[in-house]
Length: 467
Image (cartoon, rainbow, N blue to C red; front, side, top):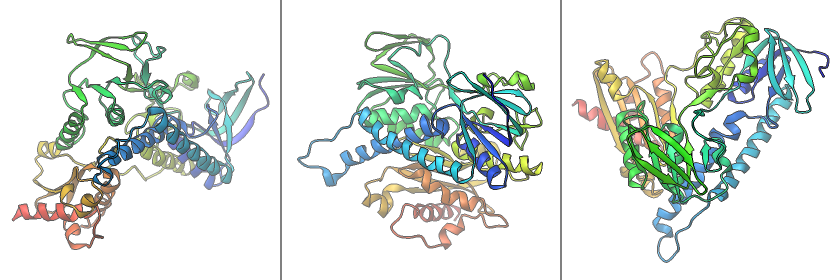
């Protein structure tokens, strides 16, 4: 049954970071906005299956590793352990807090939240299907698609098997595995390899490429490989599966090269696909690419003038942080017809392995290929007083800068709190009119002792190389 139409200035489909950013910006500008969310709680994949739960898991495991390795707690004590279900309880608590917080945003800004599945009728109408089989048709001047993405499922892998997981379903893992195969060594695969190894689970990490996270500076990638292997993770490069078979008590993976791996369970973490199937895109003349992603203009407008798209549904950079900014930029374009603001040119990367990796700007390989005259400044965490105090001596900070202008070209960090530390370098890199120079880190005064002091140490190290 379809009820009478409801009228809005804008309808946003999907309440993840991209959709939220667009909805809040539109609402604060006086527009009447509806948010259509398929699931019972707002927040999207970021809150429920991706960023928030995985980082909460990582934090708990990291603290456990820190406790077990800290000399303060050594001696006669027994090494502490946690089960996967125990650390999941902490993650669920964080999710509940995030839902409560974000629900308040919609209430305060008078955005109507409608829980149902959205399908486009035409460029200005959306049909909402509810669980009770009823429907509404919602009319809007403009529409934002922010439906996100999901783990890619190849047809020859049986994800219905109770021991074969993707990065969403692994959060419902009930048994306590002693071994796991992780297929796909991208960001998600490496993060979960760290998490499971921190819990004492035997990990086989299958990488389809020749090195881990090849988009990173090679030194950072090598550091991650070393520390994963040093902690007992078995990494297998340049491998692809021939078959993945679930058994009564585990999983068997056979590779194209002839290897046979057996484990209690398998996490398939090799690629993601845009969520477009239920949108009825053909009704407005839109067609996704082979990854389920939509093409958009610099202002996030699709090929249909009244419809915009942001977040994972448009592909790169597929980051929660960038999606929120995309939503705000998109909303400005919807309000004003154009938006000159763009995402920052150097978007920071945060990878929540144990230890963390974060980077911004150019890598050494890129600068070498572009024949840019650069120099390197390094600081080892083990030489910092704060790292010694906190027993976080693993890691380093690397600053790449132009030999002649001293302009900071890239910053790369490996170690605990790397994703926080990187923003100091990012802030300097964004300065204009000569404000971006490595000499800033020498001429300013840092709190002591702090991890941020690594910038001063690295800057001095780099400038000394010029002499």
